[in-house]
Length: 389
Ligand SMILES: [Zn+2]
Image (cartoon, rainbow, N blue to C red):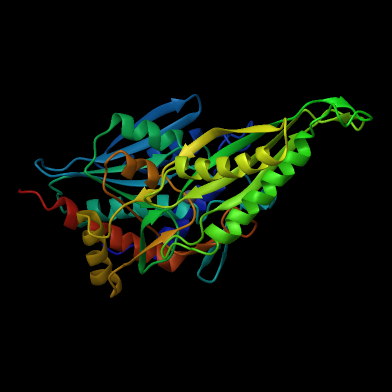
């Protein structure tokens, strides 16, 4: 069945109007409770089983299962129901506005476009009268923009043979790998002393500053000089810094927070080793100064394959529907694909065009959502097969 622009605009507008900011990013934000109830209602006339799984209070995953006739695999379409905040845009962020092919609103692209395409593909499959052999599981998950508690909870509890992460990108492409990342603290120790007693004090801030300069050198000479052909330059930037006690005292401690990426084939331990090399140089120059690395959060890179069955099926579906097989590419950001593939589930990431993610004037292309919906429908049928009877 063909999904219309009007059907996309209606559902996407309804989803944009529902605040679903993740409280992991914005303390006190409402979470995914209301959008979950909306999705359950929207599916009420479909022959599906809807399960709302509370991951944390007010933080549900919404699971919509279309059972097959049996004997086939299970395919999961995973799109996230949460968004980042809209304080950088204002309340009009929740008022959808159409201008030509674009629909503007917080989450219009990231990832309510993905939720829309997944739900409309499901409705279209049901409407076509096809009975699938395998099971189709839509997972409209919580907290992708936070700590990914939704997808973590999902893959701990539900088996699946493949996952399509439906996230905005651009038609004609699929993402089969992306960088991992670490949030890392570097804690520096000096020796506090009266400001007039330099022979007693060890300046933790000056030592940490030399570490920052050393990390910047690695960024220029190693990361920027050797971009990954698919995922670009390894991510590195400083995020936070603090230290010392007062003007009059040698600072005995200082702390730096950084974000740093890993390419497929690398682990955060590789990055930590590089950082420790810089620390050792500074320690050798500055008697009494020490520093150590603390990893606050670690996420592995996504290492899917364009040769997995799901990637081949999706690409062929794009060829049939959109006249072009998908070009496999990577990216320098992170998504829940890192978790699903990491759990051994063959994963590919795919989605319609959008722009201004996480920023004012976020938009999604309505026509690309229509086409993405048709590609997903075709791929689901091809992957799960048609049942008997
Ligand atoms: Zn997203």
